[in-house]
Image (cartoon, rainbow over all chains, first blue to last red):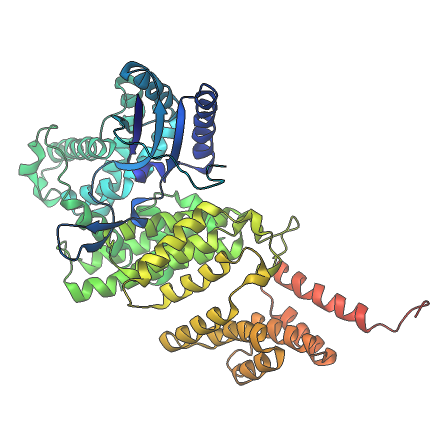
Length: 126
Length: 419
């Protein structure tokens, strides 16, 4: 089963981390990523820029309306995600717990993937 | 998350909103600051013991408010002063902890704090000191070090600023639309000054940290005004300039020109964010000085090598900036692009008329010398470089020009033996 692990955190807090703190978190996460990749359990993962760089296309109007900012103003924001391929929810939670230990604060939403279209550009993902 | 460094990061992030809310309750900056500090101290023992709160900001506001109220009650018992003098919102005080912070206040609270620091009665130096102390939470010592003044002098500057604000009797209601726009421009200008203080010093110095702080303040401002293209431009401009920090100086502290920098050292993440914001701002078709400067920085950032730089685009953008914000310094910068496009002669013709107004400006003579050198007018070039060295304000600036002069001397020396 494929799951998306959606990473939520207060971006004000994350952007208040010192460079050293940020690098420490990223290097701990990289260790986990490498292990999951070797085990063939990790798909694409990514970290998003802050919500101030986001643009939203509201489809409720015709033509759709372009709005500056994220879709929803929330206390914690979607900052990135992992796609993992694991046996079941228990294993997905185990991965999320491991990530949580490496990355303080915030929350992970574990969401099963319904349709998965891999990146098929040549040379992509390198 | 209960590690000291992580708790500090949470407190720094919470500070503008928490302090803004406490200021709304107490209507007094010193009381609000004390309340916040009190709350932070209590957090240092409470969070490791009970685990971090789900909402650190709300926790700090409630604990800070209660602490200040307790203190005020104790003082009220000792001296028969009416507590209402200090507390505007007594009814509110009994609100149970479960009653979470009202998010609708967020914008007004933070804005009030920023507007207060940039009050028109305060000179720019005091605005900056106050904003770094109040909004960023830097210590007086840190600010003093960044501005190369003594701690006592900085303490005095901040005290004066606070006294002036108290005298000004600032209304606590959010300002109207017109005033808001004016005050927003003042906050943006203050933030850009903070950035430039850090930028001119470079990443290695303690002042260099001001760049990161200015970016944090500007991001905060953009969260409050997410559709304001000039604020997008301001954030983008600072991100794109700051992205070059690691490449701007060599190991001896000497400045490296943009075209000679190792572009591999540029910070790709900051550039990506800056470019994204430039794109967003452009869509609004309401150009302003920050946006145009950011667009110029974006063209530099997009060139993977110096020779790929879109000088025609940069020339056009500087022309737009000249219209928006006419200044001899802008024209001087444009001349560099013109020099690349149409040669040193055209550039020189462009800057000649600026001479009377830039007679005391280091970069004018540096650029003039470089154009003259390209034209082979060596004596005049040397004269311009000498003037530049005399006007240099930092050793690194003078050293940079001296390198030009040395090369000039070597090249014009009489041919030696093998000649």
